[in-house]
Structures are given as C-alpha cells and as structure tokens.
Length: 298
Image (cartoon, rainbow, N blue to C red; front, top):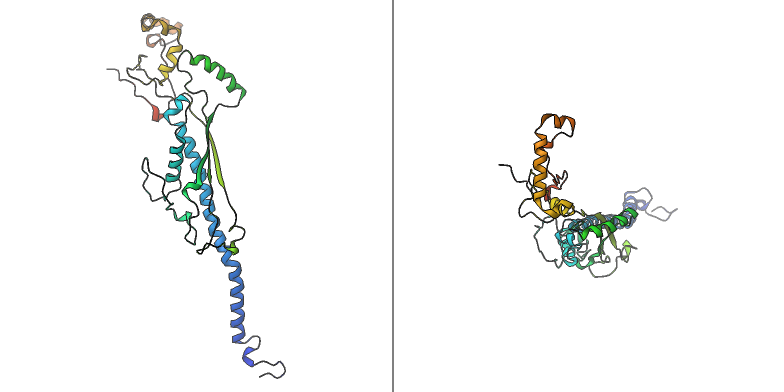
C-alpha cells in the first residue's frame, strides 16, 4: 500500500482495475444519452411513416371522387366508404391483399404502426376523413362561367358538374407512447406525453365534362346506345339544327359532298368539302380510360 496516498497499487490511476472502472462509467454515461437518442430516432421514423401514409390517403380520397360516377350529379362518393378504404389500403400492411369492400381491421398489421413496447402506435379509428367536400372555383372568371353554365344546363346536360373542386383532408392521431406496463417513458420526454395530429389536404379540380368518348362514328353519326356523357350527346342539344332532326344535316352534308367532288372548289375554298359532316364533334383529347370505340366503317 502506498502510505503517502492511502491506496493500494492496483487502485492507482492508470492501473488495469482503474481503467476498467473508468470504462464502465463512460459506458453508463453514454447509454444514458445514446439509448433515448436511438429510441427517439426510431420513433421519429415511425412518425414520418404515418405522415407519408396520411398524405397518400388524402390524395387517394380526392382522386376517388374525381373518377366516381356520382360526381356527374355533383355528388361525392360515400364518405364512410371512402374513409374505410383509406384505413384498409393506405394504413394496412404492404403484404396484405387489396380486396374490394374489405372491412376496417381491429388493429393495423403494419409493423411501423406498432411501438417497440408492442403497443399500437396508431389505431384504425384514429384515422379520419375529416374534410370531404366539393366546391366551385373561387375565381371571378369561373363564377362568371358558372352563370352561363346554369343557363346552358337548361338546354341539355352541359355542364354536367358546375363545381368540380374536390377537397379531401385526412387526419391521423397516434397514441401516446407508453411502456409495457402502461407508464409514460420519461426518457422520451416530451414525446411520451405529446398528442400529435398528422394531417394532409389535397385539392383537385375534377373533370367537369366527365368525358365518355366521342359518341359518334367516323361519319359523324351518333352511335346507338352511347352514354349520355359522350361529347356528341353533350354538345348536340346545343346545336340549333338538332331541333329539326338529322334530315337537315343529311341534306346539307350531301350538298357539301357534291361541291367537294368538283376539283377547283377545294382549291378555291376550304379543302375537304367532300368529307365535311355538319355537326361532327371530333374530340381530339379524351382520357384513355373513358374512350368509347368508334364504329368501324365497313
């Protein structure tokens, strides 16, 4: 023993026993800092996951309205049905098979929605479609066109939807972080007591025309049984000659074709008189999923 310092040789600073004790203390101090930091980073990743799911859910809800048939009558799809689909498809496990009409699960199977204590981070009933509405555009030009739209609607079915501005806002409220025994985790303060609300809003301008194809063959004749949302069936009632039937158009077309058969007429006037069809709509842009095949000319 060192009489001067009152300690054994093996307990002196720099000895092997001293270094081991110092390492344990340093490890304990590091764990106090690093363990909560690692847990916080993991939890932050889960929160980011919830936020991204919520953004995708809002986009899905808005898109579901723009392609739904009920939008023609200025109605949105069923709020409850859309909300249920969001819970099943956007917050479910990526390995789950998507099925139409699937019921909301009692608990999400996504591992990212479970805390490291095995508790639910997000419950199905905590995902809500809080705002789901359809409005007209607030622009002055759109308001002016809406007045014209109301007048033309009395003549036919144009426009089918005077609104079309669909808003969907989804909220996801995670649970408070607790330990396995249900007590708050003080080392995650303030995350262990925060009541978070992740929300996302998507606004889409729906296709107010709800195009359903041309609705006519290549000769400009209406296709029998075509939807009333085809371009022809929307525009045709607004053409004055439609009041006297197709016979007027047939006579006019015959005259045009006769003039078009004279060579110099096409050179002097507009080329293509021989192919002119009065009242032909000829839409040039129609969404591919709404195309109606033209009747082949046999």
